[in-house]
Image (cartoon, rainbow, N blue to C red; front, side, top):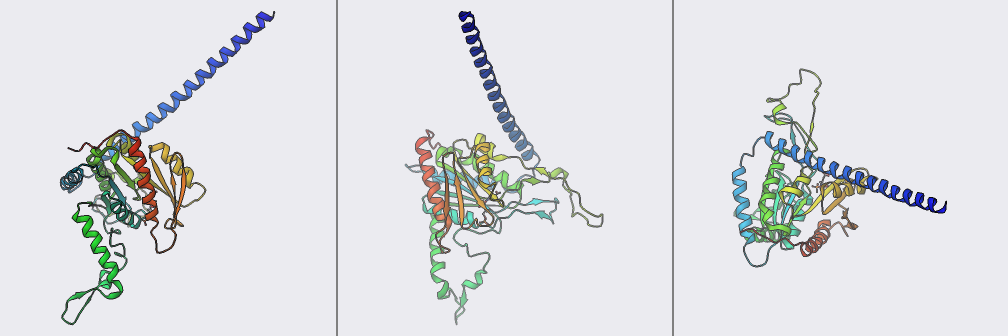
Length: 353
Ligand code: PAZ
């Protein structure tokens, strides 16, 4: 009888384990297939987005500029770090001959300030920015007219008033140094169509830098758009009454960037929210979903004062110490450290010849 109970017990255990294994395998399969189908959806979504987007007007020129910039910064013995900083908001045109558009909140100040600190840290920077947004080294523009910074003397020579002299001198010096040393390439965009096509060109151009490349994606990118082929050709008329419009979802190109365009690059994306209760959970989700190395989480209410740097292992709050200081100084300090750790752990090398 005891022997029979023992046999039954062993049988039960092995069954359980088998059932357990089956469940694990099943769950694992479900996760893999969901992830795979999501990646496939992102990939095919991106493909059809690019196929139907109006082609870049100056795509050839941008490619040439990128080629030149990559060549210049990959010469020399020690590999230089290269970073693509995206900055400002993308627009979604509602008409092909665009009179109206949907915009995204971003002045471009964060991207402009960050670019300065990346250059200071020795990086070559590709500054992909919204036309008319804040620019590195002259962040006091465009809000303040440059005419406030100059005056004419008795002989009509242009002078900078003493009150602004130190700021302007520093800006001129640092800007010309960055440009003179070939460390800054500026590429402007306005629409979501331009932005994503430029991002793809940049990513595939700097892929040869391997782990020495970084993406710092601070731009506020549209989530919804009107596909070009279904967009009104001319100005939408108001006489026909209220406007009903269906917006498609913009494909999630972050995972395509990570997996296909620049798989060895160190990727930092930003997450802006208005509800503090969901901020870090959304950042965690973006980290996993798109395979980002870092997500910088910020709230609309205080994004100039504080951000949370989220990685797989840490959540570090970065606060600016005073209103005279840029938060980006500390933020870029932290990110360049994390990038160095990544380079040390990663095996990939620059291969731009
Ligand atoms: O450009 P800016 O300095 O006015 O603002 C920066 C920011 C808030 C747009 C940026 O920190 C950010 O969160 N970008 C990502 C926005 C998004 O989640 O789409």
